[in-house]
Image (cartoon, rainbow, N blue to C red; front, side):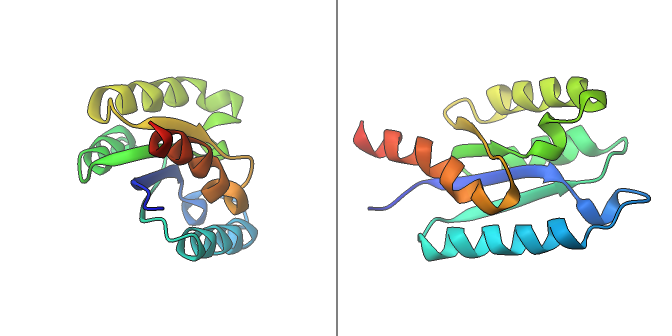
Length: 124
C-alpha cells in the first residue's frame, strides 16, 4: 500500500546547549529505519531555537506535498515552548492544509504515529 510523504518537525538535539544529544540522535536513527522498513518516504526538519526557527519550518512545509506532519515531543512537551508549538501547528495549517497532524511519544515511534493517519487517508 503506497503512502504519502511525511514531514517530521522537531528540535535538533545536537544544538540544545548543555544537553547530551546522543540518546535522542540514536532514537532518531532508529525512527528513520522504521520509516524505511515500512516503505514510507519522509523528510526531517530538525531546527535550532533561534530567530530562523519558524522560517525554516515554513520552508520545509512547502518543499513537498505532505500527507502527514509529525510534530515531535521536544516542541510539544516543553512548557516553555508552548508558544512555539502553537506557531508550528498554525504553520502546518497554513502551508500544508491537506496534511494530517500527528504526534509521537518518542523518536522511535514516529513512523507509527504517521501511520495512524496515513492509513486513514489510504482508506478514503
